[in-house]
Image (cartoon, rainbow, N blue to C red; front, side, top):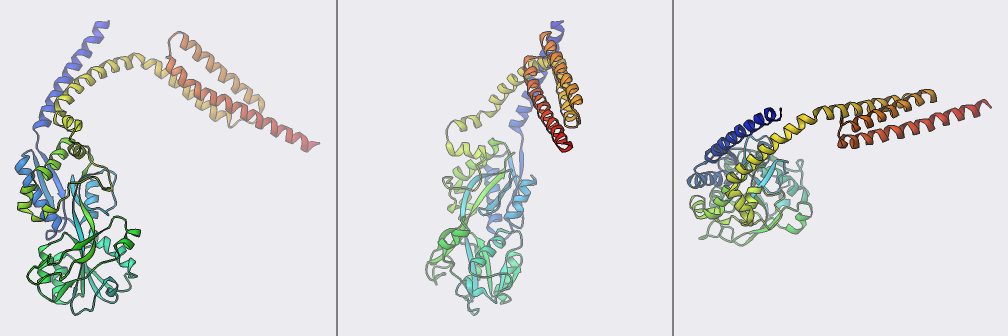
Length: 432
């Protein structure tokens, strides 16, 4: 009889091991097709994403990245949450969704407030009564403008705000259809540079960084250096104080660690290739010492620690195969044991259900006689359980789990008895 039971278990284990080996080999050679949620096609996120996808494909042929044009950080977070994208670029102020994990801190994104020279705007507070072009709703720039404006005493009723696509916003400012444009973007953006070369548009300082951090702690003080957008006729004409947030590369927590490790490796070891395609990648800061606002993905963490976790990532497949063999063998034995103990467990569950039904009945009794009958039932259940334990119809573990609800039922009876006796005594006092 024992041989008849063990043989199917052994065969099942062998089939499981072979199936596991097949899937592990397929996993090792599969191509991962990922969607990277970036931003608008004229923005820095999109340009960086295109360069990153090309460098990844060049160095890791089993990883293919499709760059998705989006409205910005908020939409990117929603796409990650729904797993419609597996990677995304977001600003560090973006509310974090539960399945999102950090891969890398990239580069600072400066607050750019551009105004026409004839608009009489020297600071953020001067936007009162003006026409201001913003990036589309749902973008990080749009979301960041409002707390900034609020700090300077501005609201939607104090100015005319016009959300629009980046290229439309730039054209509107150039034509004088708006007085100012606000955009959070990487330093040196070509489209911003073109506007500043006209001579009719200038950058406006955004100071009070320390005060802004009181309500917006994710901001950091930055400077747009003199001549950043033109060295011949310096634009700006002097170092310009601004504030900034950080751009982050984030991923869905379900992406395999070895894939995320390869992506993190690309940012570090193939940085020169990135810079050749996207010069502003030179500002990438591969530093996780600061607060990223969300936990690192295990694959990225393995790269940064450069220790034992990296070994585990590198040899994940053979280790996984060995673990699978062990797990399948243990699982088969466990299933056999579970089958043998099934009847014992079912019987113990029946007793627990009886106890729960008894507790419901105790709460509804109206007399001490009914309560005494339930007490006798409770102790009868205990007697049957002890007998079943003695003849191995239930396990000692099941008996231990039974004692807890039994004690609750017994305590409930004592409490109900006190209540009924108290009510009976109160009634007698009223009759006297």
